[in-house]
Image: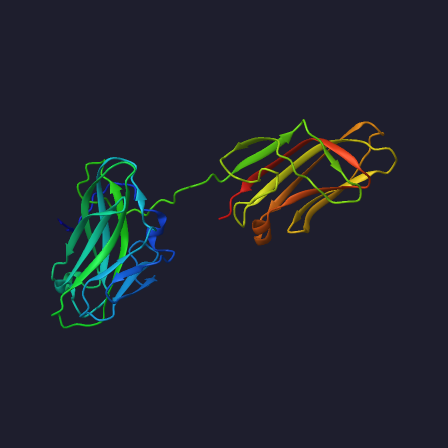
Length: 341
């Protein structure tokens, strides 16, 4: 078992915090109590990193073996093989009781789901110096690229110690790759939000071979597979050109174009609509101006803010001509121009 180190001095060197952004505790995580009696809450009354910290309340100090974890919320995939430094901060919530002499906290290290080490942390008994102050602990860990590392905590309280109802805060979790001759932790830095998808991108489908026959005075669903082109790695439409938004608050731009041979007669027209869950979201009435037998060209472009219904149901394009027509050279592109924040 490794012995944890009490740290009061930090290297004045920036080093990336490898933990996921959830380790900030700004959004409440699910704390799994696996042994003992304790309650947990995420509070902003005491904070090391500027947001919330985890408050652990031992309902009876005579209860030993308090074990808890955060499930998969702080699992970190290691990018580089080598020495890493794990550190965290802890604060005694009690202003009158210095409970640390009878209190040991362990960080259990899990690598690829296996408990590879337990790091034991002891507080120095000095109420004047350490009560109501953030105390920092650390230990070095050798990890291999692509390892998935996680941490859980285990508290051992002395049964003979006379105080009940003790609470403490945990915050300032940091895991860093020691590629800068640090030896001890660098000054705390917040986890960086990992961008898992591009903010913008597009998908388009083109069909210059097949045609679609449309019934007059009927909403005809436009559906075709076509040739897919895309950039940005986003899924914005399905294989039949139904619009599939990524998240509420996004803004998409739809461009749709096609040809048709003008039918016999005068004052012919068609209506192009975008429907969300059967409700018309956009539409436009367009005249067919070319003479009978000539190819006429049509295109629309709509900006589409994504609300809850659009996200849940997607969007579909319909064409309603006043008389039967056949369309060809269909082209549809959906672009994400704004990512919700």
